[in-house]
Length: 273
Image 1 (tube, rainbow, N blue to C red):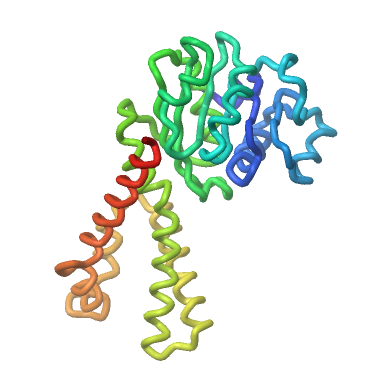
Image 2: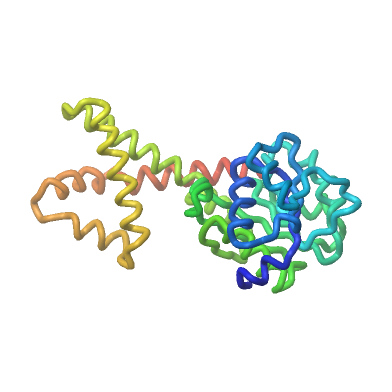
């Protein structure tokens, strides 16, 4: 679905916190008329309220709203409480798009009208700067057009990948959903190691922060695989090779990351029940 097509759709956003707010700003940046958007949020920020002057509706009577898509962006802990409000917004042609972590399609469908089209999605925090990646899966009730609409709405904050097997969502969450925290920890760890090597703390953090951010941008822009980029930095017998001998050795980063991702995936399954 093109940007022009998504601008013709109407959307209800349930929850306008950091992720919901990022989606809202992305839609408006794509050209969606604020008058075609409804936001259900008990504590809207000033930036969201500013869109009211352009037609955005905040917390209207749900009887007057029948959007093409309902995007659920609340914390999963309150999912059961808000599902009746979501159901009240649904029509037979509405697709429900959830970005709640751990809430399955079965859980969502159980709280919606019979045969509702549902898309479950997992974004990550770089969505706040338009550089996120979201993985989505749809139920069998979602039409091709509804999947395309969901894709266009989610793509407002970055790339979107689709899967057919919902059971993969726990692994997705463990890799891309939780992954930004691993990268931030890498920056912390690198800075601490720099301190141990004798660098002043502030300089060590500046170096680590810039190195992680710059390397991520290089990876983003390059067509080369991460392994090739790593090899390009590594001279045989040099300083980088000496460090990689440690990081890639027994009980190195690969093994540590495998255990970390497995732990996150197990926790995701437990939270989903």
